[in-house]
Length: 178
Image (cartoon, rainbow, N blue to C red; front, side):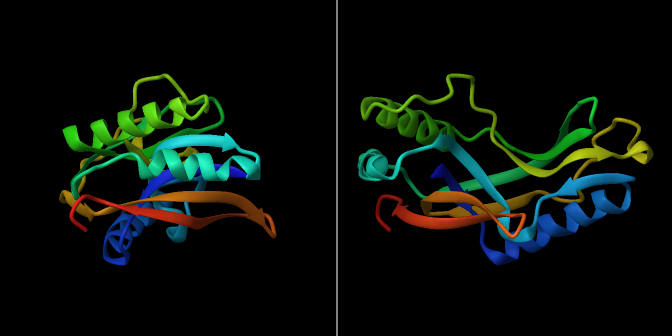
């Protein structure tokens, strides 16, 4: 099973993000754009995990306490590539989010999982392999800050169904006091 831990967004937030994604699509000659149902903020990517290890993932997640989060999407960015840019939305620095991600990583490591050691850079991918000459390599400003309220984290299964990437929520864990 290909797994990751994420924060999923409410429908009203997804609508705002989809509007930005569609603006990017209109300005692009080509690219693969994230479907609206797959919009999320990854906290920890686990990769391939054998199903007998699923209880250990759940145990690690249940050990982590976190307050309800108020996240702000404040800017756009890009990772340049020869095949086309990865375009994304970035979040204002949030100490509670960074602590949650560190705590999840530590809990997973204590249960024997190997996780990425690179510094966490919270972002939401709008698309990959994007060629947008109209943007001239720039990141346009957001029309307004998008606020995301979240009181849960989710263990997600990633799979391809009929050639399309599909995410399924397996378990959720709630913030303190929820």
